[in-house]
Amino acid sequence: MDELEQLRAEIDEIDRKMTILFEERMKIVDKVGQYKQKNNLPILNTHREEMVLAKNSTYLQDKSLQEPLKKFFISLMKISKEKQNFS
Ligand SMILES: C=C(O[C@@H]1C=C(C(=O)O)C=C[C@H]1O)C(=O)O
Image 1: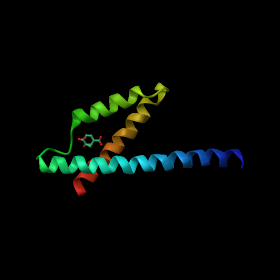
Image 2 (image 1 turned 30 degrees about the vertical axis):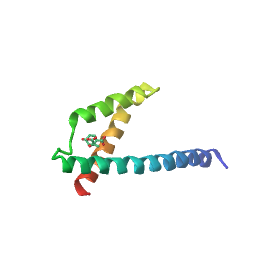
Image 3 (image 1 turned 90 degrees about the vertical axis):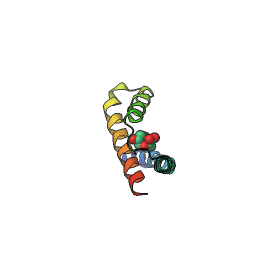
Image 4 (image 1 turned 135 degrees about the vertical axis):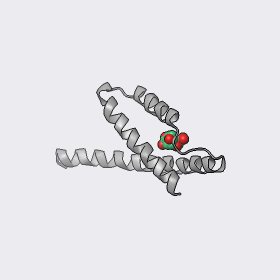
């Protein structure tokens, strides 16, 4: 395997794990959505979103990834809110 193929194989394996975790997260997000509907709570919780961003940025070793990680979580939480809206 040449170097590019090897690197892409590594990305593929990371993507596989991320997909499994994504599906797991979305299942929980659905349950949170159902809870909110039952208890008449809004889908958006800005305080919680700020906590998610702040907490996960502390797990980074490479602090130059702070902004990209923030963008990643903002997109992920947008997908979560869409899921709660339409399920
Ligand atoms: C999942 C929730 O709903 C929304 C989505 C969030 C997320 O994807 O982490 C966080 C806060 C909410 O805006 C929640 O309230 O926990």
